[in-house]
Amino acid sequence: MVCYLYLIVQLSQGMQISEFVFFLGVIGGFSGWLGMVSKNLVAVKRDSDMICDFREYLELETEDGGGCDTADSLEIVFDHVSYRYSGAKEDTIKDVSFRLAPGEKLALVGVNGAGKSTIVKLMSGMYLPTSGTVYVNHVSTGELNQKAYFAKQAAIFQEPFQTSYSIAENIAFTEQYDKKRVWKALEAAGLAEKVRGLEEKENTCLGKDIKKNGVQLSGGELQKLLLARVLYRDASLVMLDEPTAALDALAETGIYESYHTLLKKPAVLFISHRLASTRFCDRILMLEDGKIIEEGTHGQLMEQRGRYYELFQVQSRYYSERKVKD
Ligand code: ADP
Image 1: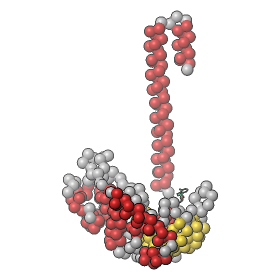
Image 2 (image 1 turned 45 degrees about the vertical axis):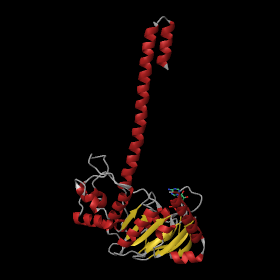
Image 3 (image 1 turned 120 degrees about the horizontal axis):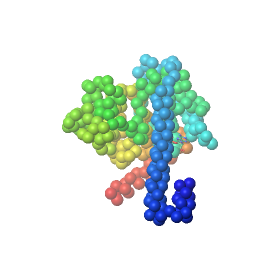
Image 4 (image 1 turned 90 degrees about the horizontal axis):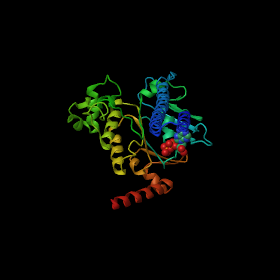
């Protein structure tokens, strides 16, 4: 503003029009450049804050309490658990009680927003209940040796995490991976043939961010990679929070059935808002508005003709109509 005012004053005192236009251009260019610098500085500050938060999170000390060090099988018990997000007016999870037995295949179903992901976070020990207790082999998640507990879990979330490192590192999540185990997991997950056909095999990078010959996996192949990751980990507790949500209903059912067939030993929590995907499970919990409203096998819930039955009918109609349209 000062420069522009100065120019106007100079013009009124006899500055030539050509000079005026020239300096006007210079001032315009300079202020544009300054604007860009300040915008970039703001972006750098924002990114740096985010990276600092992420580093702080990575450096968080985990509590080393008792329990869960040696047991290979896990029993999880939710005992009257409620959870309220900070600032929320009411509980998201309301007095939920259930047991996940060692090796059991349990499904948690319900419409979006019912509280399924919040239950996974409570089960994994990432969140502690506002009231009630989550027990892992009889020790509450608040008093647990969290490092040991995390080491026994494999959790796959809705937005699958992948890095630009090699396929093997994406499966093992470490540079010192066991090559034999990586290939065993790839074979079982049905991705071995694809990886064998790549120039650098399991050392091929995911995506083309780091190396030009990196591989871009399709949605279905990415799902197989996630399955291989779970198999490599050899966990005692597997939580699948709709990693297949981006796939169509039929593909989701196929992937969930592969998990079911391949994961014999661990307890598995299958989550889905599509009821057909989890009907093979030992037991199904139907969650609505943070409460378990129905429980049983697929057959039992269909016989009850309650909310599960109702939603199953609506969804099958929707998918068969879409199939007809497609
Ligand atoms: P679902 O997995 O069944 O879709 P969620 O557990 O993600 O349900 O969410 C249940 C409810 O909790 C939703 O109403 C959602 O808005 C709320 N919620 C989820 N995460 C947060 C959060 N970090 N802070 C506040 N509310 C949240």
